[in-house]
Image (tube, rainbow, N blue to C red; front, side):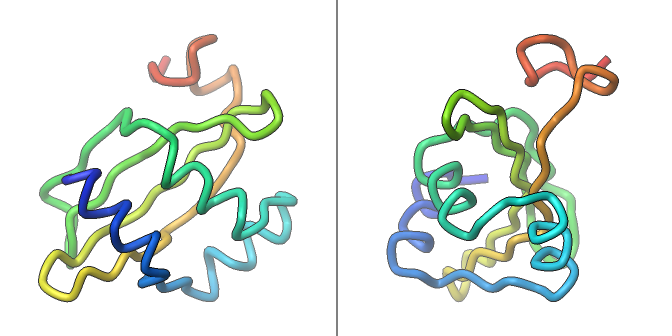
Length: 102
């Protein structure tokens, strides 16, 4: 995924939130502003170019020293970023760097 294009979409607030992602964010205590911060400052740790209907990626960022993962997709034709999910990674599934899967 082109992180520069993703960030331009986020800055322009061309972001779509589906009901599922918003419900999960609420359950997990994750705000839209937290998601925006990771999208703007985080790093792509996994890229999924074959995802449909749009390529997506897993981003890692930290909010107040707490790691946060965001999965987002980008429609490069419309420059719309779709939020798929957001969660706090755990040591059961990721190494201590929260980048590497176990």
